[in-house]
Length: 168
Image 1 (cartoon, rainbow, N blue to C red):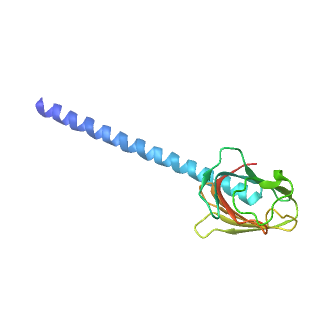
Image 2: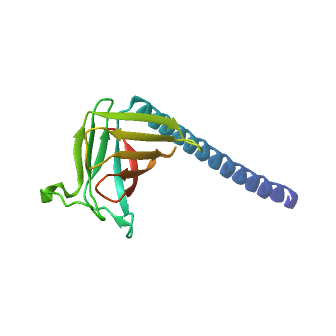
Image 3: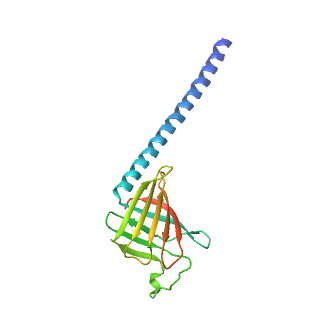
């Protein structure tokens, strides 16, 4: 009788441990499925050239990183790029209109180059032909949906942003 109770305890413990391992395995599989689905959705957005970059922080060339509390974005489509980004840093020429202090414009005259990144993701170079606020933008998109943007201008120091890629 004592032997039977001991076997019963070991059997219960073994079943409990086995159930716990199975639950962890299923959780890991569902998490992996979710990551793969997000990566496929991101790939679709980037390849369609229809997405938005939502910055969360900004780093001027000379200065400290600042967290952004307002809603800013860079909207990209096949034929139009709309920028609504802040600017902090040194300008070599002052804008005539104080409302032009940020990087705000809409452009339809640009060159768009997209290459695969070295460690996955994509590197995108956008060269503007008709803008004075931005000469070019380098956008590095990572597999997890995070992205870094560097904006270069003729009249200002470069500035970089970190944020996320979202659907337009």
